[in-house]
Amino acid sequence: MMSIPLRIKEIIRKFSYHYHYLLLLILTCFYMVIMYTDSLKLPLGHLTFLVLVSMALIMYQPSSQIRRVLVMIGVLGGLSAFYSPINDVPDEYVHYARSLFLSEGDLNLSNNPQDLEVSEDIKAIDQRAGKSLLKDKLGQVRHSDQQLSYLAVKMTNAYYSISYLPQALGLALGNALKLPVIWTYYLGRLVNLSAYLLLIYLALKRAGAYQQVIAVVAMNPMTVYLAASYNQDGFATGMILLVISLFLNLLESPKVSYRQLLTYYLACLILVVTKFPYLLLSLLPLFIREEGEKHERMEKFLNKFLLTIIVIGFGLIWYLLYNQIQPPKLADFLEKVNSSKQLQTIFSNLPLYGRLIFRKMFESLLNLNGMLIYGPLTYGTASSFTLYLAYLGLVYLNNLGKARVGAGLKLGLLLVILGVSGMITLALYLTWTPVGDLEILGVQSRYFIGLLPLIYLLLSSHKPAAQGLTNLVTDKKVINLGLVFLLTMLIATVLQYYR
Image (tube, rainbow, N blue to C red):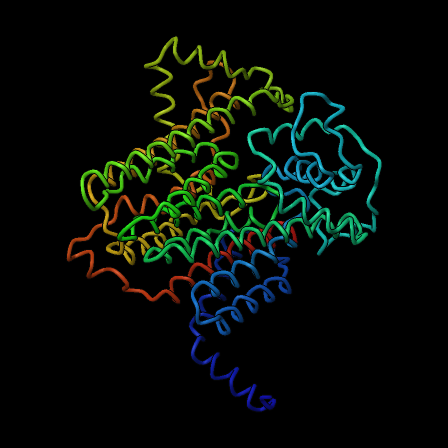
């Protein structure tokens, strides 16, 4: 064992090597205080704690990039799970309800209110919405076997139960251990984060030369924030990144095996019931140029085409199934929402409404600052998105020449990016916007985070000039900068709720 003097000496050595990061973390903290609070009453204890934890993560990070990323997401995501007030994450109350519903053995939603009963634990959680374990006295409420009908759970109809399995496991485990309802609530958040870490681990293992890109997107502050909650978007983004990594694995393989193809399309099937518009990722292998004899190339293409048709067919069946569940009208404007009438309206004046959908789609892709807005979309660092965009630009240049992407594949990437964006926009126009409105409601930047690796691939280059820019910044520095942006998410939450 290392003696105390030697440990102190080691700490000093590590600190002297990383002192510039401590200065960056302190400057980040000062910047956040100046930009995002007007109060002189600052939560100095929480801010100091977060800076010290971040510094420790930099000083004692593992040598492996995969472990480094997982540790940073795990620690800072875990802190987010506790710092974020109850049901403060976007739509978390309905996602908690669905998780509770599943934890009691109910797999499928129904239009019958009697089939939508959940434990009265949900009342205890709803009554404490906006409160935090770290600040408020939440009481020791015990799990209740009494049931009540909770119609809002139908708001999650577009996602199958697999998206809520981690959260449900956390709730079931907490109840089995007879933990108080509040502690069980936080356990569900942590298990969801653990599932996200598993998906990211699998994605990073298969990302090949694009591992840094996948790591940076996995560390996106909004994604980690969602993964440490009951919102299923964290799980969905993890699945999207895994599917993209499996595609990168296909792209880099000199000879693609049937096992690789089946794995890829199986992951796409799961993605269909997790984040429906991303089913178009199933098209990507069709644009990979095959090597070998003509009959071999044709056989491989036909196999991919058949598997793609299966995924899309499954997607259509899932779309019809989940639309049988009628969500409750929880807001006045939802009374004017009708998918079939909206579709008729679109076709009645296709030039007008087609232009509206395309305009919103491109606006959303070009203005992603909403991915830094947290809570019930009421606070965050959106005004500093330019800094995050500069970071993403650095990552782009650092990976500019890592993938060999031909013109045919670039066309496929462009079509998939536009297709997914269009499906997200159209879905919200049909299901979340009053009939005939000329403003599409509900489109949020977080829905497009999964497209970032595809955008990097689309803009990649294998020219000599691009090769000269590649790997200018080490993986370690890139990931450490990603940690700084995760810190801003936590500081934003602390400044909002802990002053």
